[in-house]
Length: 173
Ligand code: HEC
Image (cartoon, rainbow, N blue to C red; front, side):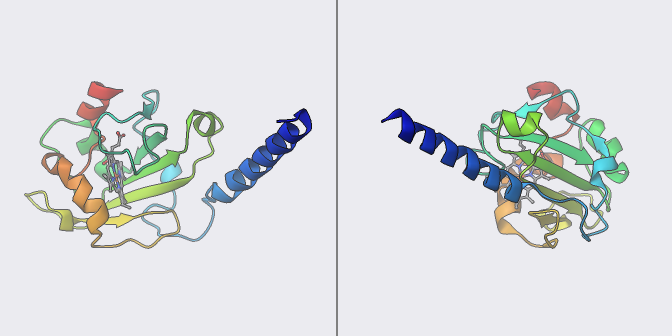
């Protein structure tokens, strides 16, 4: 390729990267569900324990895949259980938010692409997918049934459908 064309391609890639980057960054200031509107003030359980790669072998096509970076926030209601030991049984009102970054660069720049959210809807002695609601974005509605999300999270049935807890972080990050 001629140097001129190379420059054009480079320019195109950086401009489209900018557009995609800007369009993709979520805006956490809008009106949203009060259950997770202020998640940024919660405990970031991945603080200092960078979550990336694919320790479970499950995220290849979701949650930004192996190259993705993830930060997980838990509200005060769910925190003690999340930071405790098994059996993990989250109380109703627990909310877990995962902020997703496309890659290391986006993570370093703190430019997330989107969120996924889990809300515990009822107390139960036994783990059940139906106890959780699921949302795929800051401004998205909570769905009480989402077979896509709960189907895969059922791999973590023993830990109440939540992968990222203290044991998981100690083991993998
Ligand atoms: C194909 C499997 C799969 C699907 C589908 C999936 N997840 Fe996950 N999810 C995972 C795995 C694995 C993790 C832990 C990732 C890690 O850090 O290694 C995770 C982590 C999370 C977390 C952080 C808490 C935790 O369990 O670690 C939230 C919140 C979450 N997912 C929500 C969702 C929502 C909402 C959907 C549907 C829109 C969804 N997930 C779909 C596999 C999946």
